[in-house]
Length: 273
Image 1 (cartoon, rainbow, N blue to C red):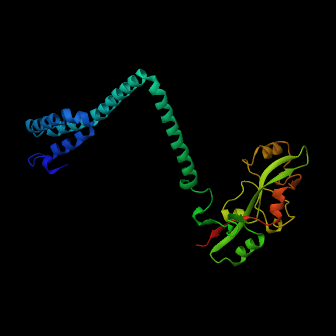
Image 2 (cartoon, helix red, strand yellow; image 1 turned 60 degrees about the vertical axis):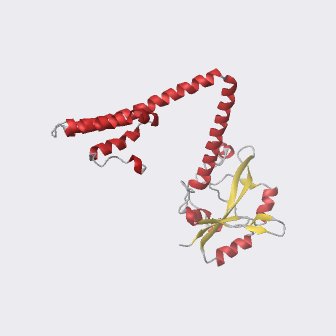
Image 3 (tube, rainbow, N blue to C red; image 1 turned 180 degrees about the vertical axis):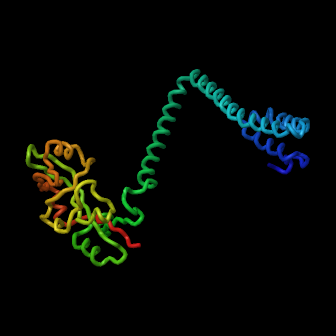
């Protein structure tokens, strides 16, 4: 409020409060009725007897708090009706406007969904702020992500001082055989300690153990309900035993198998406190 519009010093505290509450009304309503409402409050304040003044004040305040939302809704309804009449009068303009609004709202929703999933929502792991992703680069060939060799992973696990532990995973494909037609199953090779590094535990069964880690030791699996339709259909036909071990699983002998033998992994590490 500018100095030229300050309320008179003679106004009571109630009138000053009432004057401020009139800002709850829409701007157009204030321009037309605000001064009259303030003058009416002054008259009521001066005319009422002291024993009835409290009742009058409460009635005036209650009237503002009840009618201000009604005025906003009334003006909004008028604006919507006017907009609909204008759009109905020019359909050639209405269709492009609606399409642009729909595209804008959809794009905004999509961007927020991605930002929420990637930036805002915390990772579904214990202490996600302590997790880091390790990777290697080949600057000579301009490759900014080449994964990590198995010896490099062992060096991190044995020599890193700022990392509490290091686990590794590698996405790949499997061919599931036994008990029916072979099926393609999407999965990953992981180090035995990956789940403890991430701070997660299986709902059923157990973690991997060190004896199950290493080339030629792929004898145990952990199943996920969201691992794909092939896994669910295989489970439905009884290919998985109660110990969460496959009846027979063979690694696919194509590019994914070659890359696995080369020892490339994407380690995840948990930093020390």
